[in-house]
Image (cartoon, rainbow over all chains, first blue to last red; front, side, top):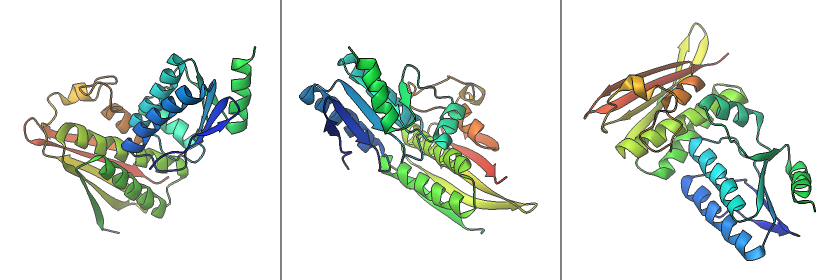
Length: 118
Length: 133
């Protein structure tokens, strides 16, 4: 199962709406990096509004994606992390440090605009 | 109610199956949305541990009842290498998998009760339970 990655102007938008198995999340990592290289996207928003469970593996891959995109010169914002997911991640002992986050897709784009301004 | 759901863990897809079953069951017992997330995540971590360390094993889920309270019990059992030092495995930050899992302390925090039986060379059995509020 491939997660669709949409290009809007100089940004890439991803809304994760599927149950994330290991294979899907690793394919997504690679697809996103390739798409950034292809499109020269300056920013990415990954929206997690529909994701009701993030375990340590998914969290690690998402954290890695953020670092990898930044190595490529792009900026990634994670948006829409659900309250239940935030609580579970912290209790599990996972802190996504140095990750830009936003309440929703809209805010995510505003944050990208601000970070990439000028 | 006394029924046990058994999910055999042999590959990565089985991890997803286990947590989907856990989600269905925790919904059926009317756990709140946060507890559903805790339970599903705990199952995912325990199933991943089986896959990472033992390659094969199983997750068993069942509903418990005590003093009119309902609970969901997760048993994760494998015949893998076992845990050499259980006390160490329960320390935050301790890992033998290079940080692929959150480790057992995280799972313990997500659940209400948690116990491990493990014999090196024979296998591991972890039992964890969450009660409805």
